[in-house]
Length: 244
Image (cartoon, rainbow, N blue to C red):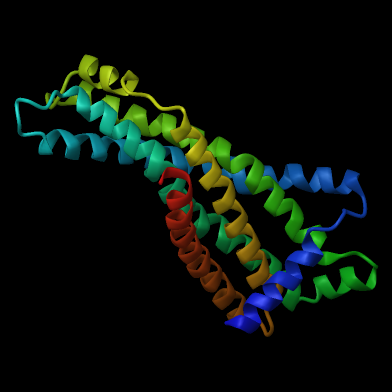
């Protein structure tokens, strides 16, 4: 474990260096934003809608006291989606989708000796392959999470339209009430940290592959597992630091 963490740190020292050509870096960055970010909007949006709807239904179902106003449904959905569901659950989903893609892509390049070819050409392969992915995720994942928040709140509102659990007016009143702008900042800080963890860990696992196709698959699995574990761990740490 200590040895692997040391190799991870050494790799990050190679990754975070000045790119050889900024023109090539900018081009690769746009490609990664499309592959890692824009392609993930669809699945994130669909999951967020149903996630917000489920939270709204569960909250309304558990309000069994006449002294608790139904506008608390909107408030609860807002707090749950912004504080936890969108930044954390969506990052876990992105760890599975994006992390496995990064690990398998770089791992395949390693076993087919494409990374060795880059080294022979005098190119820093760690910086060329991993740095644009980390930068793209840290820049675009907050956009994905903001979209997820919007669709999550929309899912809760759709419940008010298709059920009689609560009214649309109650839900919107709850959304607008007791708003704290820091919750958005807190969620985006978590998102940026999680984006770094997903891409750097997945890049390390792919870069460290030795063997063939079986080892590439194993590296993809390790990337998802370790990214998920680190997301849960840092979720606790950041929550303690920012909200306590």
